[in-house]
Amino acid sequence: MSLFRLVRPIALAGSLLGAAVALGACSFSPVYSGTLASQPMLDLAFAKPASRLEQVIYQELALRFGSSVAPTAPLATVTVAASSGAVGLSATANPNKLSSLTVTASVTVTRRDGSDAAPITFTRQASAQYTTSGQVLADTAAGNEAAERAAKAAAESLRLAMLASLSR
Image (cartoon, rainbow, N blue to C red; front, side, top):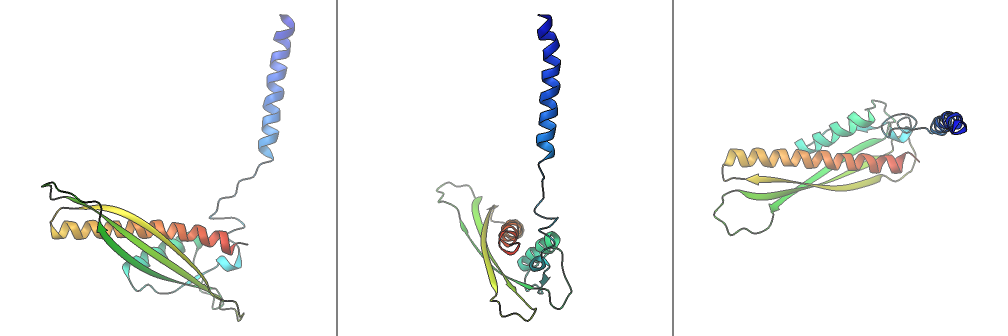
């Protein structure tokens, strides 16, 4: 029994030391900084937005990638389309109706460094649900808020697609 008491602390210390060495060999790199963010194709300039949803997507992408003012920085141009519709059919007398709004966002990255490379286009969709109650102001506000939520989700999906493709 005394041998077990002597071996147990040594085994515990050895396993802790082994775990520390194994974890020390690991490295973590977030997708929004480090070597991925320093890629020249990710140093983007953004076009001017033509709508509120485009503005939301431009702001999200500029927040994550940063924005360049260099004349040779690749130009990212966003186009957005939104569509809405009712979710399911209801035969109740309840005036509240569930609606869904889908945002389809495309970003085209065009090189401006004089190369003949073709523009790269990424397209993603995102949906958000909202409830309408028959009150015009509340319905409009709910639809606008759902559109912005869907645009932010589409922007995040676009960001990840751009990181995966342009950081190679």
